[in-house]
Image 1: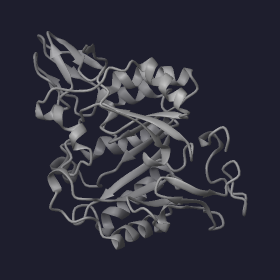
Image 2: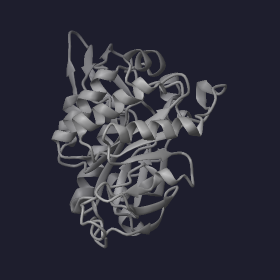
Image 3: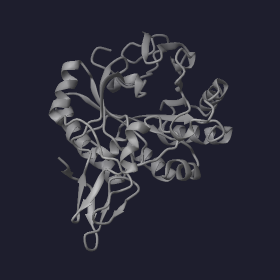
Image 4: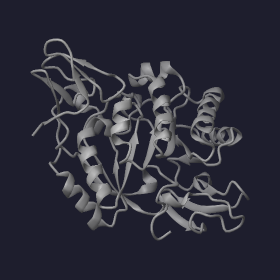
Amino acid sequence: MDTPALLWRPLEGNTLQCQLCAHFCRIEEGARGQCGVRENRGGTLFSLSHDKVAALNLDPVEKKPLFHFLPGTKTLSLGTQGCNLACAFCQNASLSQPPRQGKALTGEKIPPREIVRMAQTSGAASIAYTYSEPTIFFELMLETATLAKEAGLANIMVSNGFQSPQCLDALGGLIQAVNIDIKSFRDDFYRDICAARLGPVLKNLVHMKKLGWHIEVTTLIIPELNDSDGELSDIARFVHDELGQDTPWHVSRFHPCHQMQGHAPTPLDTLKRAYDIGRAAGLSHVFVGNVPGSDLENTICPGCGQMVVERNGFTILRNRLRRGVCPGCGNVVIRAENLGKGD
C-alpha cells in the first residue's frame, strides 16, 4: 500500500514540490519525481517504496564500508528499489534504476517493527539503510530508525549525500554513522555522469558533521574520469579540512558495470597513488577498497605507525586496540562511542 509522503509543499493548483532531496522536484499531478518513487496524486505526494523492501541481508559493518564504527559487528542491511541519481557506473543498477525507467516497484512488505525484531534476533548491532539510496525510502527509514534507537540499535546510512537540509534535520537524532560518496570533485562529472550536482553533497557533509554523525567517505576511482592527481588532492583536502583528519577515506576500485561495461577497471597503482595523495594531505586513515588482501585496508595508528587493526576484505583478522586506544602509544584511534559493547 502506497504511503503519504513527508517533506513536500503544495504549489499552485495540484502541483507540488518535493523537499526530500536536493533536486527539489516540481511535480505535476499524476507525475513522479526524478527518483521515480514519489508520485503526485491529486495534489498529495505519495511514497511508492515505503512497504517494498527489495534487499535485506546480515552484513559485516565493514562491507558498508565502515571501518571505524562498531568494528567487527554485524549490521542488518536493507534497501528498496530506486535512486535520486542516475550514475552511469552504478554497481547496483538492477536495484536502483528500474523506477527511473518507469518500471513498477517490486519488494516485500516488512513492517519497521519486524525489521527491528529481525535485527535483534540476528545479533546485529545496527541497521544499515543502504544498497540503493536510502533518501528515497525516507519514510521507511525514519520509522525504522526511530524504533531501532528505542531498541538500543545503531542506525547507519550509506548514501550519495544528495539530501535536502530538511531531510538531514529530520534524521538528525536517529542516525549515528554514515558512509557518503564523493564521486568526483567536479560539478560536470556529477551533472553529466550522475544527473546531479556536487555542491549539495559537500554542504551536506558539513551539515552531517554538525549533527554529530560519524562520517566515512568513499570515492570510486574511475580511470580517466576522476583519477587525476589534482582531483584526488581536492577531495582529500576537503575531507581533511571540512570533516577532520581522522575521517576515513575509502578509495575503491572500479569494475566495469551498468552503462560503462567497456571501461577499464582501476589499475592497482592508481589506487596506491590515491592512497599516497590522501596521506600526503594529512588524512590519518586512507583505505583501498574492492581489492581483497591489500595491505592498504588495515588501520595504522597515526601516533606511532603501528598496524592496530588488520583486515582481509570485510573480515578483521586482528584488533590490537584496547577500547579504541593504541597499546603502543596510547593514541585514541577509534572513539569510545563508536565501539561495540564488547570491544
